[in-house]
Length: 110
Length: 113
Image (cartoon, rainbow over all chains, first blue to last red; front, side):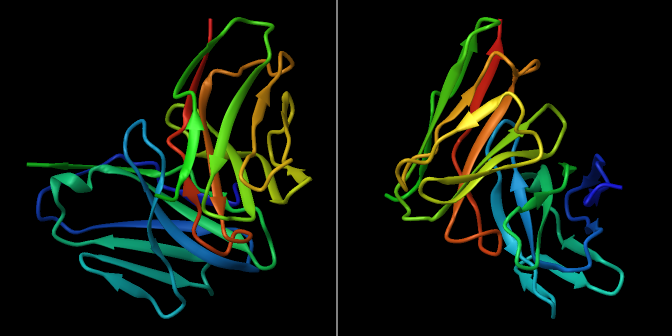
């Protein structure tokens, strides 16, 4: 079983739609969680950190469920510019090796 | 402007040749990483370094080597022992460990011809 698993998609949604991605992780001792965005042929960039209480940044909401070992990303009112690959990132407690998921591809269409 | 710089952006190599990818950062970050990304795949960790003169193997270190003689620099050598080197290589740095945001360079696209 992979340490971090994501649905590869692609998710094809119309503009204005709400879309949700889930990511599961296998190490219950994981400490830090992030969502990164990667545009085609570009480097990944931090979208948002994920906090235990959940957090929101504009149209984006991230949640963590430690009991079930998954994190989620919700995008509301999708824009064409949201089209990208979204990477789930997990770091174990006391660890140094950040683990990236394979990513979920999102296409937002007019 | 602070940032992390990789060079070159595109690199072509003949089979059997070693090649070195450059990664420099002026963010004063202690931790630096090298990842490999294949088409449609996630990032796989090659090597990482927490401090100068120290580095650790990641998940796919075979056929690669690194050095960390300066805090700012973490070059990656792709040796002839790497059987399938064509990929997108990404260098990253962070303040410390994996608990803080990682900043990436723009990547080097290596093609073996």
